[in-house]
Image 1: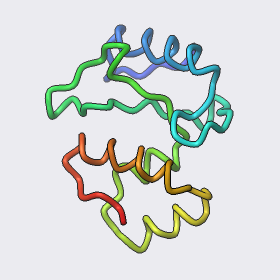
Image 2: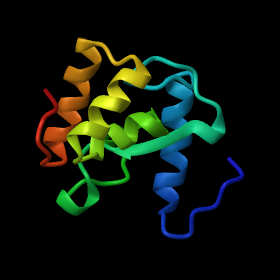
Image 3: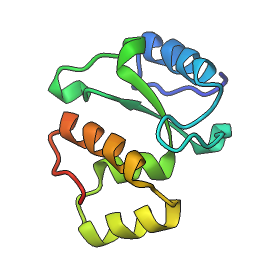
Image 4: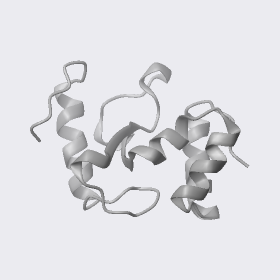
Length: 107
């Protein structure tokens, strides 16, 4: 609540707190509880592709999962998958996010 991100809207700042609270602090991919230092608020539909700061467009992830959503290096992606213990069902969710970001799915 005390963080300030000057490039973000008030709507974003309020909705990310609400989303974190609704998800009880858990990553929406792994289910892992996240401390404030490990939370990343992701735009499901990226802003540059027409997404907004509205509550229903925000998702709570751990930083490494967010990196996996956006990563383009296949070797690094596979390393992160292994390190994070990403299951097939988690990878399906990640690939849905990647599609919304117009990125290639991870196989």
